[in-house]
Image (cartoon, rainbow, N blue to C red):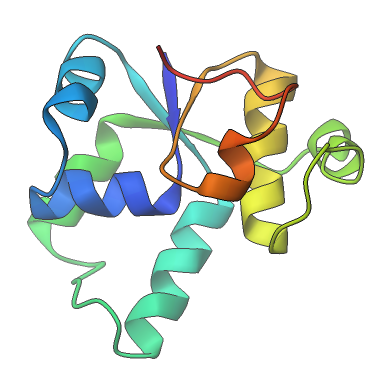
Length: 120
């Protein structure tokens, strides 16, 4: 299983993955932190993405994902990371740590972490 951050999920939906990312995603089941959905809604609200949350494409894609809620353990872990970022990124990274799921991300701040498990 792979945990996708917001940008990777969007790249998946919009067909903007690298060859490496495609290879990783097509071999694994996929998960997201529930905060990814909020982050996508905010991006749509700001006009930075155009996505129909009620549309069949989005609903079909969502059914293919395991969505992890923010638990007390994830919230606590998000305060113990070895990098600083926005709260959504910290929750996403903490989800990978607590759920022991490699994270697929392009985020340079997160990629410097020594404690977040990454997709290989």
